[in-house]
Amino acid sequence: MAAILKTEGIVMKFEGLTAINNLNIEIQEHQIYGLIGPNGAGKTTAFNVITGFLTPTEGKVYFRGEDITGLKPNKITKKGIGRTFQNIKLFPEMSVIENVMTGFHIHRKFSFFEAMFRLPRFFKDENKMYHEGMELLDLVGLTEFAHDQAGSLPYGHQRKLEIARALATHPTMLLLDEPAAGMNPQESSELMDLIRKLRDEMNLTILLIEHDMKVVMGICEWIKVLDHGEEIAEGTPEEIRNNPRVIEAYLGEARKVA
Amino acid sequence: MIDKKRIRNWILTSVSIVFLFLLLAYLNKHASSYVIQILNVTAIYIILTVSYNLINGITGQFSLEPNAFVAIGAYTAALLTMTPQEKAMTFIIQPCISPLNHISIPFLPAILTGGVVTAILAFLMGIPVFRVRGDYLAIVTLGFGEIVRVFATNLIPLTNGALGLKGLRQYTNIWWTWGTAVVVVFFIVGLVNSSYGRAMKAIREDEAAAQAMGINVFWHKMLAFVVAAFFEGVGGGLLAHLLTTIDPRLFTFFLTFNLLIMIVAGGLGSTTGAIIGAILFAWGSELLRWMEEPHVIFGLHTPGIPGMRMVTFSVLLILLMIFARNGIMGRKEFSWDGLFSFINRKVLRRA
Image 1: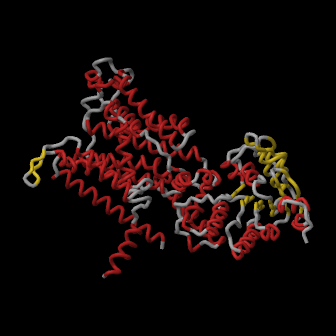
Image 2 (image 1 turned 60 degrees about the vertical axis):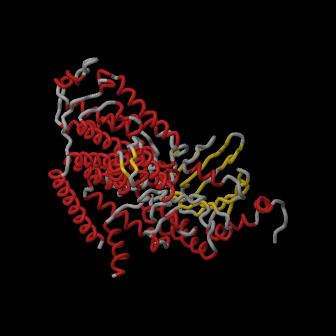
Image 3 (image 1 turned 90 degrees about the vertical axis):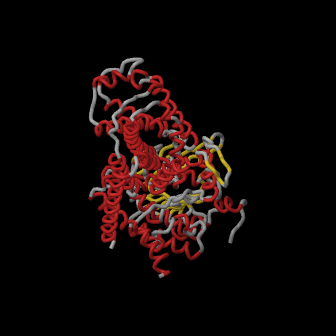
């Protein structure tokens, strides 16, 4: 198996603060990879570096062997990395289906002239976007809300809509930033099924940040733990669970945990 | 099901347009020239507000330059339609520069060229301008509007300075203005309801999320800007050949300000709202002329107070901002489906 995403010595400094210090991630194709750590560990910063929202102070990001360091976020999306946001960033005044269809924009097959003159190809492609959008909504279970305003959805549904919208860009790799935040146990268990389904049926590689340990331990195959921007551990869920440094980072001091 | 509805809507739209033009034909024959003039101005306002709304309302980039675009379109079209003799007579301070001094082309290509020139200048302006957003964008574009006006005043061999261009032929008639307005609305609604329109709205709602969708934010802002500029330029050409006289004072910030009132009152981000705003502004400001005339109210004689019209307008605007902050339409659009479901809900249920 080849590494689909690889970072080499990422350092991200904001003025005097070092948010990430020497991050090396290697994610295999078809893997569900978890990035965890206490608040302020630099997880979201790592996401922003990978997806081009931040240019790292040092280090390189490779996607499918190609150097994508410092590319614009829209270029990186086009290369096949989709993402969601920790603080939900939907298009609140657009309908649910329109939110998803926005993701198809980069795959449109008509020019803006064809849209203005309303030529056949425009209708055909718009129709296709609508139907594919409905399929994605079906996948995440939001079909009945298709024509509601996105901003009016409950929190858990908004998170699912963000995933559907990211899938519309046809990614090969999906970055989920705290997808289970604000979900009840029922919803987060559905989310775990969904994430597995995406990996198995849509052949995606998934990198996720999550605080809900049940979700992380339940679906991740490999976990990396950050604290204060430093890598402190990595391994399988089993290894991480019993790693004294991880326990220390989370609980503040080294204690024997039964 | 969807196709059946689409055909129905298409027929309804076509019938409405035919009806509109029949009405215009009737008014053109029987209405006073005063009414016809207001009708023409209404249509030009519609062209301008619907395009202005594309960049300000749909794409959410608060910019203040349409007076510049209208001016560029108006001057370009006017300079192209004037005959060499007319130019020689008009340019009395300094002669008109070559080759414009011996060029004269028909009306349609002239206004289209006006649009193209405006669009090209908008493109060049967009490159630096879209590096900033929010208040800064408003200020930079406001400055651009002033620069164009100052150029129009001082570039005497091209614009005839403060004297302006006079004696243009009145090519613009009710068919030109309303015909263009229908075409512009058709094009812009097509664009707004397409994937491009969704991308523009996405930029308005959340730029970072739009980027995460792979949307090139800069180019989509530019697209909205250039398309709006093209139609505003065409509108300027129509305006020039309606008024037959243009000078730099016509294109001050007040033009932009009025257009802004129209789209905000109608509902920022709604094309329907932009049209309603344009109609209300054009007719409202005429109806309110009544306020400036002398009257006898309950036996009391009141003299006409010049400026009362604008005072009333301001009061109405303040009331609108207090009681309907999102304007008349908000971000909603008129649609046949919406109309039918409204009738179903309100009228048929009662019956």
